[in-house]
Image 1: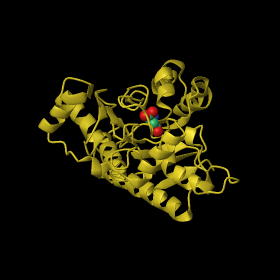
Image 2: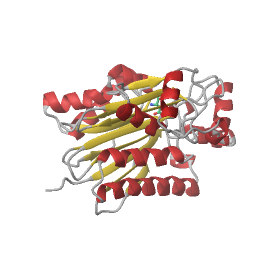
Image 3: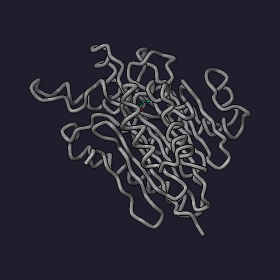
Image 4: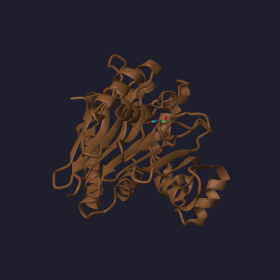
Length: 328
Ligand code: ASP
């Protein structure tokens, strides 16, 4: 019998208050989330693999400038754009990742190339670039990735000399133009942005992928949780497929995603119980803010976050897409 195929995606978490987005902005985010979930779901509906579905969904999120990955990625404090990505196949438990790469149009495809065409898991630097050129990855110049909103975010972050997590870049612009008496729609210290997808295909296989520009105003060379298996991305057919967004350092120090799978495997917890315990109880012990998306082999989907909002969507084969931003 075919497994209950479904896909879930996220576009970052943070203090996303209703007042931080206009109705039009909100509609743009929701439309983008729904159409990308539907594109990934179409792959599953046609009997395609979970791996292909998450690759497609994350590459579309990377192409969409609303999200902090690929086009629209945030800037380092040197004005460069350095991206991280990972992908993992739950069936084989093979994985690929890239860190700190520049100019590659779709970092998730780079991660997949590492998984499929090298004996390695994580590649960085000049060697990664050469490898990716040899394998026909598409490269773009700096101008392709540049968006005015993210650059304005960087200027603001420089003024405030903070390191910012993503979605809030756009909100920083809004914040600066608001009267001082109005609360900031998004606390600039608590803004995250990364994209990710998890899927279960009709063959019963799980996969996960995550991609990010990291944090606004980060030091060049900083790498977050996104390309770290067990921290920002993880998939294992025995348990679940997971993708994270939030304060990368906390996800790395707590090995948040591996913790979820371990609780399922060793304590027999459900995905929902394990995910809630890590996101709501454990991450705060590490000052970790953000959220995760997960799907298990029965098709149960979870989308917990401990911030005010998380851009998120899911779709089951044969059903309509659901998308949401705020907690309620
Ligand atoms: N987790 C990402 C990082 O630390 C950022 C994010 O999710 O917004 O690079």
